[in-house]
Amino acid sequence: MNYRSLPKVLLHDHLDGGVRVDTILELADQQGYADLPADTPEGLSDWFDQGRSGSLERYLEAFTHTVAVMRDQDSIRRIAYETGIDLAADGVVYAEIRFGPSLHMIHGMTREAAIEAVLDGLAAAQRQTGIVLYGIAAALRQQTDSLDVVRAAIPYLDQGLVAFDLAGPEAGFPADDHLPACRLAREAGLGLTIHAGEADSAASIWRAVARCGATRVGHGVRIVDETDFDGERISTLAPLARRIRDHRIPLEVSITSNLDTSAFPSVQEHPFGALYRSGFNVGLNTDNRLMSRVALSDEYRLAAETFDLGPADLSEITVNALEAGFGDWPTRRRIIDDVVRPAYASVESSQEATSDST
Image: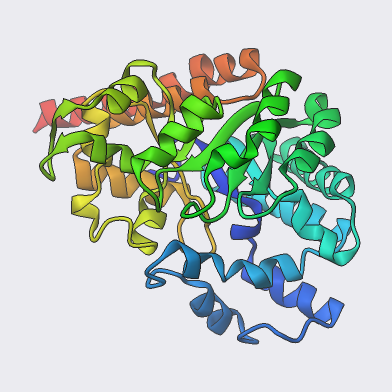
């Protein structure tokens, strides 16, 4: 299969984790930022590669330098635009891009200014390529301004912003510390997705879903700890795992990122395939394209080749992701019916024809 040409859906991608290396170097030069760890595209790309970071906390340290060059509306707008262009070139047809408005306040911007810049950049990329793009405003769980982030996000609900997210380190920072922000987001009509079950236990997933009311879970792979998983298949489910599966709560899985942060020692031991075949609603995502040196087509290829997924499986995963999206439903339904299903059916038919002829 040509994974790059397949229509794909991305629900979990961080804006400041997918900046082009050339753009970082150019903006740093323009802004006088002299703290980059390397001054060539090759050297900087190698430095940003967090494939051996070994923990989520060390993985997150790399964001210091991307945020440092996102210091005004023009730079943020450019990075958001380039994100959409790069995703469209990789065959992504629908994406929700998350970003932290508060991160840019250190440069004197308001949260609202940062939100507007992101949405402007995404809209420009959408006009140029046809990809459907939305924004998700994120707060960091180790900070105390989540309510302020939600309040800043609400006025942009009809302008391309569709959800609120809690990101950052899980351990020691439970999601339900931010119950007021989660409640306000839900009441205002924002979708709610929360990072949980990435670097902390399945209890983090319970807090996100049962306490905070999240309808999607960022990562969520530690739900496997609530099952009888032998490394290949799942035979029994504890109550939390059964709830996640039976209520069809989407898990925004990012396999390569999980390996980079040592959530699992090898791709063969990653539970994505077992979760999918046990009926969990799992999607494929990049998380941070720069830090993990990954495109969504790479994630599709990795999952397909590791877990023996064919076109019908990838079609189901992609359709499920669209159905889990927070964006305009008629648009998502059109992409399902007119783009995704026909494309994967064509690939499956071609493979069957090739198999019959041999």
